[in-house]
Image 1 (cartoon, rainbow, N blue to C red):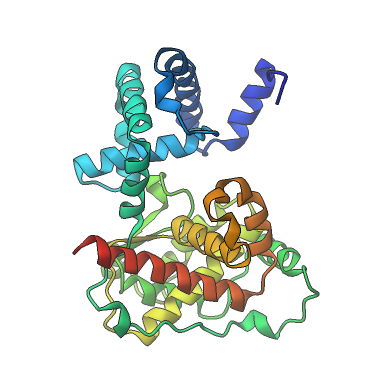
Image 2 (spheres, rainbow, N blue to C red):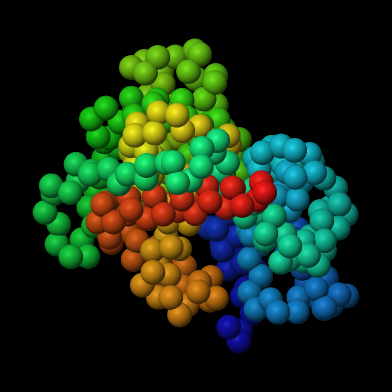
Length: 306
């Protein structure tokens, strides 16, 4: 870009890319101002950074807060919102100064710790009902858009989600920094039954908040695959919340790098293409990469506890 954006164009982009929480737009504007100040006063902080992703920087700050306070990412985000502008700027300077270490910290917080050895887990790829549907090559995205827009779910879908919740601390469906997107397993299992309508309505509410219908559908496919793993591993117990955004994000990355191994160190530049490609793959192939992402995260958890 050689011509600066106008004020209205900047506001439009902030509104488009920010989370549904209105406070996120204000925070984004604050961080943009602080970045411009820091570039002038401490240019060494930006050495090696070709692209500054405000959303990612916010995530790094919340990761640091989460570790310090021993809370979840969404709780850390609430704490971030209570900080003064000076404190936010200080935190921003810190994560820029320790960028590589902070990225490792974020990866550690994404990991899923399981009590079993990785080799003891049966990583089954569940045959999905969608495989019986004839779809033209490249048409899976259109199929997912249509399915996601209708709001339909497969038979016994909510019972499968109920089963999955017995194997983890809870689920986060949608924006991982939004506290209201978290479902607590202990609370829901103790207060509701598998076939209870209120349970289905709570899960459906979070799915319906997802704006992109194709992404809503991928969330459904992911939950079905996770439930299949849980069903085939009755002793499996995940100590953390399963954050679907994180799991699916890794599945997309792994799928793209399988086909483009030479782009491993430049994946950030390819994310748009990676997501388009993922939406156009069959449900079975997507499920296989959900399994790979799940294995990746659990394997990382085992390494980090040594």
